[in-house]
Length: 266
Image 1 (cartoon, helix red, strand yellow):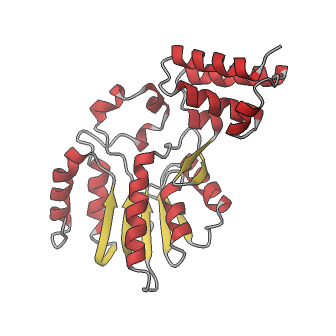
Image 2: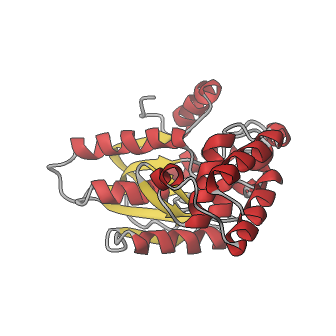
Image 3: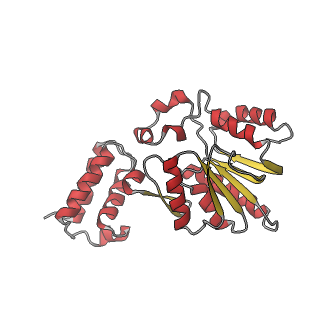
């Protein structure tokens, strides 16, 4: 007889031995997924027995996690800014720190609340996380989301449809701003910015994610530099570009902006 309280303890211990830092939380999340119950029921039904099928599924999921496969890939979804998103191999997993980009994008959008025709672009949308949140909270805006990766395009299309914002988001296949044919007010982007030499030093979980979503070239600014160069012919007067960067890269990114957008303030 396998009781839930024992399984939870054993799962946490296995993950802890496997150097999973948040072993208790992840044990809870994996069990919630296996049993299809909310968190409070893990503790309200401690004497519940797992079926043989549930025990087998749990073993498979824990084994995948011990191989350092990201939990979001194992579960097939990730919450981002309060929105549940499908994710999977071939698509970068949205990070909590990227929520700051959404907040800044929303702030800019609210400043333009009285204006008609606000146009936002998110090049390299990945799962569509940023674009979906902006569309949900700024219904007056039109959002262009672009992506080159075929797997990511499918996931973004699925997420956009699931959240009923396909009437406000135009998903385009192509490189950064190239597919967008009108000038935009705001560019919001979390593009690859990790220097190539640092990729191998990242956590094992990160190695499962698509390299092209991480690798920003020798200095980390290769893709960002191309975006800034493209922006000179794609933005309106008084437009704003919001980028996620390593703080140490800010001076070099500002220099790129001065080169390609000499009238811009940084």
